[in-house]
Amino acid sequence: MAHEDTLGGWGDRGKAAYFLEKADIVVPKRREQLHFLVDLLPWPAKEPLRVLDLGSGYGAVAEEILLRYPHSAVTCVDGSEEMVKLARESLAKYRSRVQLQLADLAHSDWQAGIDGPFHSIVSGLAIHHLTDERKRQLYIELFDLLEPGGAFLNDDIVAAPPLFENRFRAIMHRDIQDQERAIVGISRSIEEIQAEMNERLRVTPRDGYLPRAGEDTQRYDQRGYPVASPNRRSGRLFPQHGQRINNYFDHDSCGRGW
Ligand SMILES: C[S@@+](CC[C@H](N)C(=O)[O-])C[C@H]1O[C@@H](n2cnc3c(N)ncnc32)[C@H](O)[C@@H]1O
Image (cartoon, rainbow, N blue to C red; front, side, top):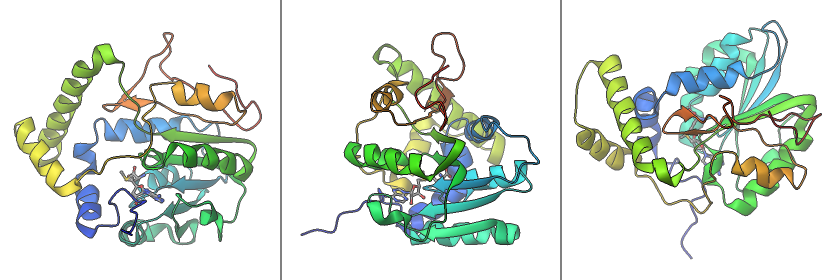
């Protein structure tokens, strides 16, 4: 039987290295997304937070937190040895404030060696790699790893509303081109950039369902499990009911939206 790739291809050295080099270009509104995720953490900057970062990659989300919260410590979990290697290098300067854990979130034993509970659990662009069944189970596991008052924040892709799908794609392409121009000073057609991304990222099909904005929260709420999702698609935070943040839940008020 063929070996099942539960990492969506991220075990590949070339793909991991490309993402490290180009994430700020190929992920639309990358910096805004990272800043916004950390903005949502409801604690003052001097707080000694303990944070768990799931699918931490080379450490971009973790680093945002380490910078904003100088007394924080972050446990990074990723299933890709290549990514963990890159994170070891990029987060070395934070020394004992960072713990790196190689573990596959597709399996419920990923928690072995994880020393909870945490004030916050965060994740960026990773949980969509899991199957729907596994996502549901993971949210239950995460709830048990949160301190009372703790918050889980998931910044991940959601589907665009069908009516706006083309518009979202066009905006995403424009953002990628703008970021490339701003960061490396070159102007390429979206076709050229896309061809490079297809080759270097070799995006694999997902088993999981891509929820629409807010939908994942509605689904899991009914079961009483906390899900927070500064929903994004094409790098844009979804306005819903006139609000900029789609939803946010914490451990104590599990199920309360705003
Ligand atoms: C697009 S990268 C995002 C990395 C990081 N969160 C960021 O925003 O820069 C997706 C990450 O999820 C990790 N990942 C995917 N499936 C995983 C799984 N089953 N278990 C653990 N990590 C996984 C990959 O190894 C990769 O590092």
